Amino acid sequence: MSGKPFAPMPMLPRPAILAEKNIRETREGAQRIEALEERVNKLSTLCNALLITFQNHTGFTEEEFLGILKTTEKKQKEVVGCTQCGEILQRGIERCIYCGAPHAHALGKIV
Ligand SMILES: [Zn+2]
Image (cartoon, rainbow, N blue to C red; front, side, top):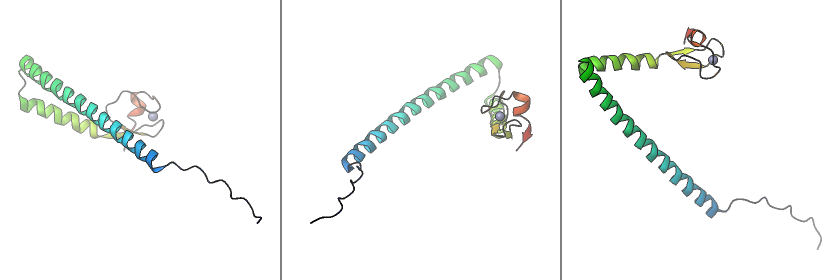
C-alpha cells in the first residue's frame, strides 16, 4: 500500500499545560490586585492624614477642602489635544506624555 505520508501535525498545547498556564496567570493577577489594593489603602490613609494636617494648620473646613477637591477633579477630567502629536491629554499637565511637547503645545486645543 503506497500513498503520501501524512504531513506532521503541528504541536498543539495540551489541555493540562493550558490549564496550568491559566491557573498561574489567574494567581499572578490576584496577587497584582492584592498589591494594588494595599497601595490604594496606604494612599487613602496618607490622604486622610494629609487632610487632618491641612485642616489643623490652615483652619480650612472639610466643606472648603471638598470644594477644592471637586474643582481639582473637574480640571483633571477636562481633556485637550496635543497640537504637536494630536494625542488626547488631561488638562493641567506640563508636557505631553506621548511626544514630550511642552505645556503650551500640550494645551493647544480643547477637544
Ligand atoms: Zn504630544
